[in-house]
Length: 619
Ligand code: AMP
Image (cartoon, rainbow, N blue to C red):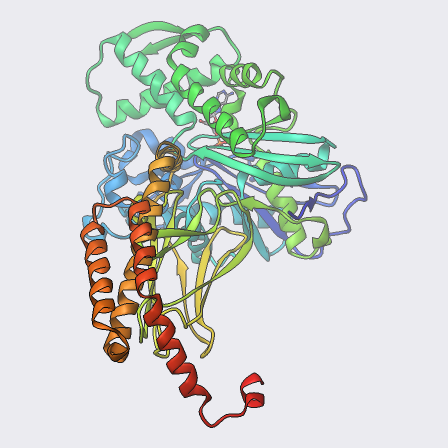
């Protein structure tokens, strides 16, 4: 597998940047923009000196949307027109999100149920793509006024587990504001790039990224500034917000509050968030809410968040297992995301890995800095040879074959970008079209995998079964988008599809699919063997029946009876028999029909040779 090179830490200072490109960390809670500023890549502050832009947009009137801190202030007073955590809505169906606590207070436009969830605001209907676009616009404005130059492009980061639809919608958001996306980059990979600048770590590194709404773990193998991504895992529905909700629940419980109106609920959440931050620096925090006074201690916080913490550690364990490593093989753990400031998180990580995690780079800035470095390379200010980032596919990508079986084309955890091709053939004589079904998952049967797309290759010249050659190529680009192409090789007829699964593949779904494949491994193998035996048997029965229709006169009466009896026996067992029994009867049919097959071959070779010299035949 190819290795990749990160620029030498402390190496040559970069040449003056002629072209301006930025790195954008489009976060669930906060977003940042960075750029190369001569001496290195820096996160750019807005005119008030803030480098964190809250990923919140307020649409209270038909004039310009209000983005960032000003919008955050309106969360409490104007919750119906103020959209936070829009990143969680990207690539989702309305039905998936309209009842989740974060979004249940919005009025959704039901008419657009199949498209991105559309929220009705005072300034019109806004979907998460528009919200993301407005956040991107604010970041671009910050960068352009800070750098006093026009931007030529951006690298935007996304969680490692974002699916095609989520990635595409991120790109669509940039398109809405005419921002050229140089590349989408996985957040953990960007963090590794940022650390590559400052340290010369060797060995295996886990990037532990716990943000406001998402959690990602990546395992990278680092050697003298050269690294390779070995495996990734995560949970798109776990982040700092969940810790806030637990504190809010605890306060409600302690204060005996049953129901809260919208405004008080928003107040409580913001209060809970502030308590969580204070608990990162003190052992106990006083709470005053709606006339109730009390306190929450660090120990209590640890206790109520135990399950969330356990989930993060379980993900680390799985990623290490996927990379076929042991926890002892991990040399460094890089902490990314504001939530890794919580001592409970750091302690749990330290306890599991048996060593203290690295926290030297500001966990809020790491991803943006990495994206900025990558943007600087892609816009042409540095040699691209020095940077080549590798990510991996979270689940296998395959194709449906006869018997509703799955043939894996790109296995899980393959480094991307990647292209792989495999040849297939027709099942029936004279077949002129082929239906291709692209699936994702680890199981042997199509019904147990995720269906991504279907398309057809038409105008295949009619040939006998098995003679046509169809090459199917799967290509996953650097952004994780899958293109599938099918080509009939004799006519060069092609059909192609770009796969955009409609809705979310989140970490829970991945976890369930992996677990199911593990639990069913033996049963799946048996089913596969049975289906393959059935297909082989059916093909033989079909071939004999078409041979009899053409050359029935070559059969003796006895032979014909014997073949028919063996076929009848096989057909009786077809559904209920085991793969071994079906296999045995298939062999039996082969045996009793071998004389017939030999006579047919003699006859047809004889016909083919008529009128030709041996030399001509040999040519
Ligand atoms: P991000 O998506 O990386 O911007 O993550 C922001 C999350 O980090 C939010 O949930 C914040 O509440 C959380 N966070 C930031 N600073 C702290 C802190 N000092 N202690 C606990 N959580 C924090």
